[in-house]
Amino acid sequence: MKSLKIGVFGAGHFGRFHALKLRGAARASLAGLHDPDPARAALVSGEAGCPALTAEALLAESDAVIIATPTLHHASLAERALQAGRHVFVEKPITATLAEADGLIALAVAQRRVLMVGQIERHSAAIRTLREHLGGRRLMALEATRVAPFRPRSLDVSVVLDLMIHDLDLILSLIPSPLVEVRAVGGAVMTGLPDWAVAQLRFANGAQAQVTASRVAVGLERKLRALGPEGEMRVDFLARSLEFLAPDGGTAVENMPGWSLARRNWTDHDSLEAEQSAFIAAILDGVPHEADGGQGRAALDAALRVEAALG
Image (tube, rainbow, N blue to C red):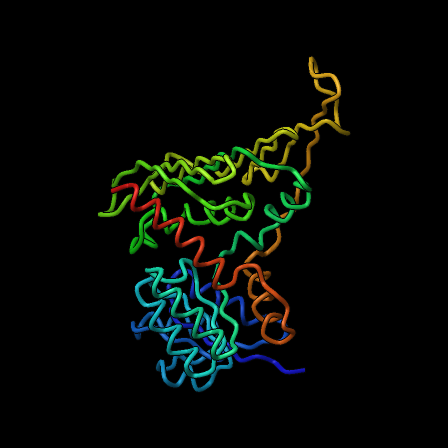
């Protein structure tokens, strides 16, 4: 069975993680990495046990590439790789603009190559557990919170494209209706871009969502609340717990005859490994993958609408 040779563009925070994870990947090997900073490239290539190559040499040595560079360079690098006939995995956000995203999607189709976007939450144990228990529930209101203390990374984009985009992507996948209105407020604290934001979304079917994201918070918090006619579901991602109030099974609820409260927990797995495995399977086996170019574009569109609402 063919083993893919995968190259990594970018030796920063996520590029390093991708390179190290590829060392033990099934059905794939690390062809090398490229970073414009020679010292950083040498450091990470030494850790990963692979050569630090020029961009041209990395493309020549690779069947597929992972692009983990600042967002500004996503479009040009991905276009170059696709034109060279390589499959492409690009970290979120897919590109800086919708026009760039549309160009990459069209080029991937023309070249018949896989274009996958790094929305790692789609491969987490938490989201898989959530989807297993949603069933056919009709969700009409969602509240998502994703906040963390300040860390000096991913500062080339706002908190919307850094953190909030994960929850925007999740909400778009849970509410099967067009997004018709976005309102938002936010502000800069440590950078020249919004470091916190609160967005209100309204959908064509009447569903609404509120999303809070901050990278200048006092502490970590990651929660999701989903409500609808079938009851309430609450997820605490840090506590690895899911609770749902519904008219079936579970523990009876005082003063609510016929309703019950159920609790579930999950064991985390390596989401990055699962994401890379999905990319490899998409190439070698033709297995459809959730986080494709179209999904990446939809998440980017929502994020850019939030940024526009911030003014």
